[in-house]
Length: 247
Ligand SMILES: [Zn+2]
Image 1: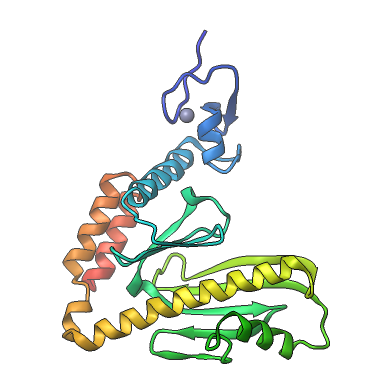
Image 2: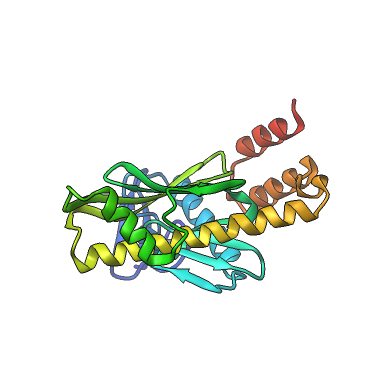
């Protein structure tokens, strides 16, 4: 007797997973939910609706530049996406304007940072790859092991304001190929963020201020679409609407 997935309705075939509430989901849905059995059917449906919504946005994304396996830029539509876990399905998708600032942390210490309306501090970005390598190793002469290298990006997103991409986790020698690769990748990512910030600044200077302000009505419309797609709950929608209307 066939058992159908309670989320997508497909025949679960030979392997299925029991989640909470005696519900069964197929292998594909199980994996898409993060291989987690301790979720309810509603939660599973929610997670998958969000992923599908994300995929629909990503489908129109035109990648002009890719850094490592975590960052992509669409210059034509002025969008960028970031997926710290290496899975594009989980990407956070943003407009250029959503980027606030970015920072490179090595062993918990800031080695370079920049952002909107701000010059890059640390001077590491100015001279290309050589400069950042020189800067990083110069500041850390006594240290031969890198325990962590993290790119931290701050965005205008209340539900997820900071995104960390871990390029190095665990002790890696600073004279190793892996360290060099991570450093190059960090340099590339920071350069991309810097270009995005410059682009936004230039546009702001050449446009009237009110153009960049999203209207409450437009914002509400966006959330209404999310609601209709099932990506957010009616309660979340109502709360957002009240907030946007200043009620
Ligand atoms: Zn399924």
